[in-house]
Image (cartoon, rainbow, N blue to C red; front, top):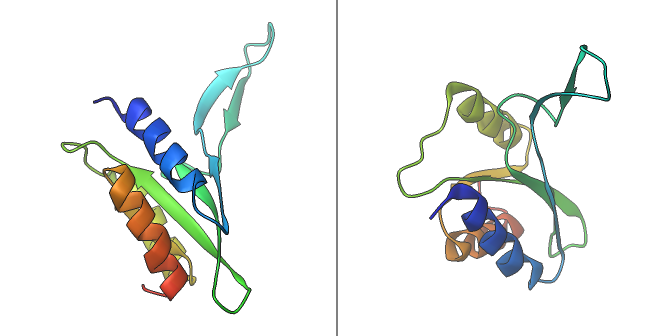
Length: 114
């Protein structure tokens, strides 16, 4: 299965959960119109594929970052660094390889797991 297809399945699974909002975070460089000037988009190099918020039991929110990888996919150095940064600042960041892992990650984030 390709990563894009896996990501679609994960987005559909997580969309069924209450108190979670995720956005697709496309990262890259493109061109606008006829300009030769590059335009960068996305949060940052290495930032997670899906980012959002999960409602905590006390009603507050927690930042959630899901990096989508296929069974054989590996993190880049930049992705590892970005996930650590999110966790060090109190968010929940994890690599997921299936819709089931993504749903489990949302619940772990909601429990306050690290």
